[in-house]
Image 1 (cartoon, rainbow, N blue to C red):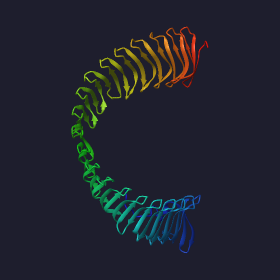
Image 2 (image 1 turned 120 degrees about the vertical axis):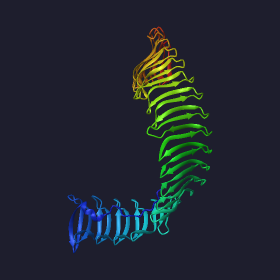
Image 3 (image 1 turned 90 degrees about the vertical axis):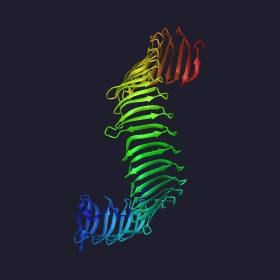
Image 4 (image 1 turned 135 degrees about the vertical axis):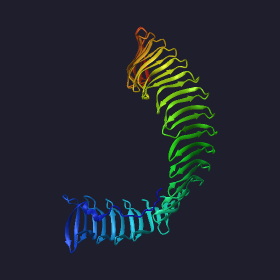
Length: 526
């Protein structure tokens, strides 16, 4: 929350030099005064300013000064000058004609009342100036009219309020800067922050509190606005949650985190705001959960390990310059090998093996090319028989993929293009006979899906697909090829007339459906 006191100043109104930005004309002359008009567009006659100067000297504006919005009679500024210096009322306006602010000048210096307004017309701030300096009490209001800020210049206090009137913050001030104690409160009046400032900069210990208990949530040490020393964060119980060492505003040293029980959770070494790649994480029982040990130097070579809560090594690998490099091993809780991966500067390279729980039988074998974008993948049954195999392009399947039964016989063949099934796909029975044939386009079944009888040649089922959904006339056949049933289907819903035939081709019955609901059954002899 920024509570810095700001002297209210006139902005963007260096009016004496505006001649250089607009074309201007001498309109008339009275005694030693000359009326000047400047224009946004000389040809169109769009007036920008009107004012008088003494003896033709552009630095000696005298009397009323007006500046207009482009193409409008509405004023941006209306003010008064006395021989080149502001003297009298100064007004700035919004384009809708409402005043933006009103102030007063005496011989070029701000003097008297100042007020600013919201565009809708409600008062925003009020203050007084004496000899160009704010004096007395400055007040700022919400659009609702409620007091937002009260700055007592003489007493050196700055107060902020919520829209509902409750105290939000109190600060001691020295001129425009915080100097001394600052306190911040929530809407219920609970202290949430407290700290000291020195000439606008936090200096000393800055506290953050839990609102309900008033217990310290965080405390940080500052020296003239710079974090220095230990910053501590606490649980609401009062126990330490985290300790972060700072040096010249940067984390530097051993950072520690704790469980609510007070047991050390993690520690990490930092140098000038950067991790050194050396850390340890712990279980709440005190045993090591994971660690990274990194040597200082250009290559930043290191080793990392992960452990179970019982202390069993689960993972071990190597790093270089913050990336996986070399062999990484994973283990089951009984110590058997779970996986062995190879990396080169963060990219998988060569063979990657996953094992079954016996630690020796390969479950998955991936082999990567040099750039790591293409790799072959083979999955195996616990018996060692190939279960599936194909290629990946990046993280998606690409090219021909085959699956196998546990006895090694071919189960299915599909073609992938960048992760989507494409073209014809086949599924076989365990004896090698064709079971189904289907076609894919961009990962969705299209056309007629065929299911075959045990001979792998005679069609059992014809199922039409459109964009991955069943749609059209579904047909089923006897082993000799005679039609057994026929009917229309959308997804899993039967539609309209469904006819069923015996092996001689005679109609047995007809079922009438509406959106999958059976309405009627007709028999030919009835």
